[in-house]
Structure formats: C-alpha cells, structure tokens
Image 1: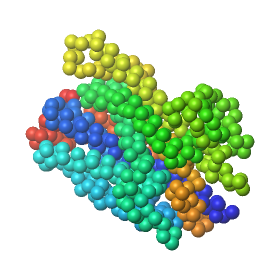
Image 2: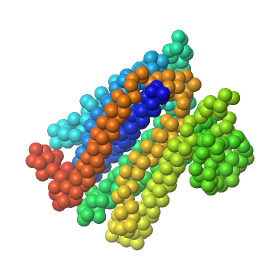
Image 3: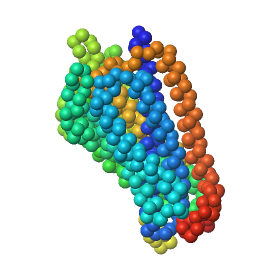
Image 4: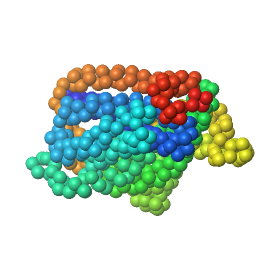
Length: 478
C-alpha cells in the first residue's frame, strides 16, 4: 500500500512541478519572437512606440526566463529523486535529447540574453537585433528538443530493448517520431496564443487605467491580431493532432470523448459525468455522429470504446476517464472563448477604422473602437493561455496512463522506493513555494503595467547612459 501511496504522491508532485514550470516557457517561447518583431519594426520605422513596447515586454521576458530556469532545474532533479527507473530504462535516449536541449538552446539563450536585455545603447543596432533573434531562436530550439523527448515517450520509435534498457537504433526516427510534428506545432501555436492574449490583456489593463500612449495602442493591436489569426490555425492543427492520437493512442481518444462502447457514428459528448464503475456517462448531452465525423471525417466512422481496453482479468488498460474528459473540454472551451473574444475585438477595431478612414489612415485597426466590456474581458483573459496549455497537457499526460513510455514501461515501474511521508513533505513545500511565486509573478506584471501607465518605467535612467541611440529609442512625450 505504501508503494501505491508513494506512486500517487510522486505523480502529484511531478505534475505540480511541471504545471508550474510550463507556464513560463509557454510565455518565453513566443515572447522572444514578439520582441524580435518589435525590434525589427523599430529598425524599419524609427517609431518610438515600438522600442517602448520592446522595453516593457523585455522585462516580462527576463522575469519569465528566470522563473522557468529555476523551476526547470527543480523538475530535472525529480528524475533522480522520484523517478530513477525512467533514466535506468530509457536514459540512453532521454539523456542525449536533454543534452541537445542544453547545448543547442539553453546556452544560446544564456549567451545572448545579456545583450538583449542591456545592450541597446551599448552595441550596434544590428547586433542587438541579432541577439534578440538568437534568444528567440534558442527558446524555440529548447521547446523542440523537449517536445521531441515527450513525443517519443508517447509514440516511441527507432530503438530496441536489450536487457531491459532502450538503445537507439535510428536517431532520425527517434527525433521525428510519429507524433512530434503535430505536438511541436500545437505547442508553438499555444505559446503564441498565450503571449498574444497576455500582451492584449496587459495592454487593455493599461488602457483602462488611463494609458492612451501610442505604444499601448500598438501592443493591443499586436496581441489581438495574434489571437485572431492563430486561433483558426490552432483548431486545424488540433484536428490533425487528434487524428494522429487516434491512430497511436486510441485509449486516450476514447477517454477524451467519454466513449465506452466501440461504435459507428459515435456521438460527441458535449457534457456528461463519466462513471468508471458503471462504465457510462450520467446526464450526457450528445450530438449524434459528430465525434465520428471529427475523428474519422465520416458520419458513420468507427471509434474504439474504452471497454475494449479492459483485460479479461478485469485490469483496466485505459487512462482515468474523468480527468482526461474534463481537461479536454476545458482546453476546447478556453479556445472557443479566445476565438470569440479576439474576433470580436478585431471586428470592433476594424469597424471604427472604417468609420474614420481619413483620421487614422494607414492603420487597419483602431483601438478606440473597442467597447469597455471588450477591454474588461481582455484583462482576465491575459492568462487564458495558461489555462488552455495546462488543460491540454493534462489531457496529453494523464491520457497516456498507465504508460510512462507507451508500450515500454509503466509509471509504476519508474517510481522511487521512498517513504510516502517524505514525498508528502516535499510536495507540500513545493506547493507553498509555487503559490507564493505565482502570486508574486502576476503581481510584478501588474506593477510594471501600472508603473508604465504612469510614465515611470525607468526610461529616464536608461536614457542617461544611452546617448543619441537612447534618445531615439524613447520619447518621454509618447
């Protein structure tokens, strides 16, 4: 019984750690590219608003980067303290992939982030722009290698088992395993949507507290445009990812859909309460045939049900249904809210622009056209990308249980033989620290937004050391 308790507590602890950690790479991955966009626009136009936007968001990037590094180190320790069986079994594959992440990505970020943060007035403009690009590229490469490892754990290829250990036979097949392209694209789009709504939400907050600067207008337009443009792409990519998952992890798809019996023309369960003991959904609200249409592109397509993943001895070989079922709906529901809000925002901005074509010539969106209810809605949606990302990761990771590496090793095989009270103690400590850090992180962003709205964001100090370049970068009148 202690082993089971240790397993459950270790799973909760790792879930808490990775849930906290993933919040920050989800921001830095795309925010690096948004900063590069701001930097390029400033170089092209010499318009101060773009550098003002850059200077504000580079602070958020630095804060997020630091939080991600610290929480990532803690998470890596758990491979040894809580899950030694993982590296003992698949370390020959996981180890090199993690090393590639450090060598090709983290070092790249670490080398150039100093120039990116402090070098605008100290190095040539082209070098500062290059440093911003390389940091953005490094964050994407970091995501690439982590997604490669995670995807390989879901759809392992290119290896052989010798004496209980995995040995690589084809690194190309390992890296470009069947689910990697879909998972990587899905994660990158999730990151850009997270940043788009963060930029829009913080900018809306600054607007509501009286900041009508040109930089806020530019940032709000940028954030809303990212959301409106990429949500349809994410929906399309999600469909492709779902089809791939149906092929390689049908039990996960069955849990996502709350489908118990294998059937043709399977309905889409909009709402229900899954009951694993009764093997049914209570109070189900269904749309006939729609699940089959989405997952097979045919109304009468066949989908495999959860009851096909129960062994003759009664052993359950599918993931826990309720967490996967609900987390999937939270992810989709948040995505729908993003779609409606971003499109509504763009529509109001465009309508205002059409009515005042002459006054705002050259701007296809007018921030003044956003009604206050839309602006107020954008503020809490600033962190909606976090909600969608966490819900998606819970769907993905809980959905592969009981496997840690699909078809190779179960989660139970990897857990450390340590006393459950020891795991409980560290878990409580982690949760307390993470709650405090998360509260502080959001508080710092709100503080930076208020400070910038008051025109006191440290620009004067920067300019005193910057010479002509700094004067061009920031105009206090803006």
